[in-house]
Length: 270
Image 1: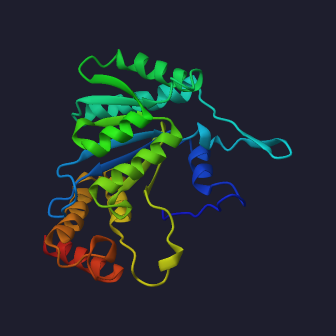
Image 2: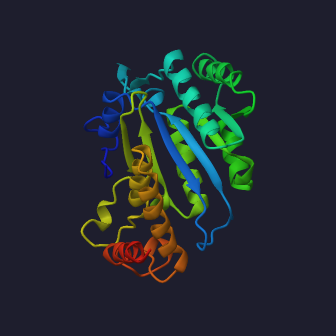
């Protein structure tokens, strides 16, 4: 799916959140991996953000307690926390990842984040071959910007995942390069780019389609069409690595159409 805009400070509830809750898309999978041939401040970044997708601060429960006093509810449940922790460790196991880091603020939010952390520790005991650690959100932000190679798979509540996935995207070149998948326990999934809408460039043929293309490759793998997904991803990353056809956000002058045509040409010649 493409990005859906959410009004700031007013208007309707997030449609992205509605889709995730309606279809029970419990885990948001956001890989951030360096693109060979596209130089950024760090080489060989390879982190995976796994974000609980249905509750936390994004559960959408807010109300006015009194005039000028607004309360927003942070909802954390054992069921959802165990579900996303299980997903994180199973993902690590199936993809030969070595470590899972639980990100939290249990020092301050002792009940809510404390429950989330407790569930992660419980699940970790069932995966003795995968290293487990927990870390405060601000410490992760600091350490990731100092050296992202210290992290592998990270699992966290909803809001923290939103923040950290954008931070991680910045380390590899920006939101235009980062795909994501919203995965449900019954096989239903929705794939989308991490970035939001860009109304300032709408209709100008300037957008970088990489994140959406890579999200479609993730979708194809989820459907069991790994070979096709791998070919599309390889062609897309190959065009970026060559450096001749890049969109403006990557320092190039190509339009969205020109970049897409270059990917199609590379696919045709593969």
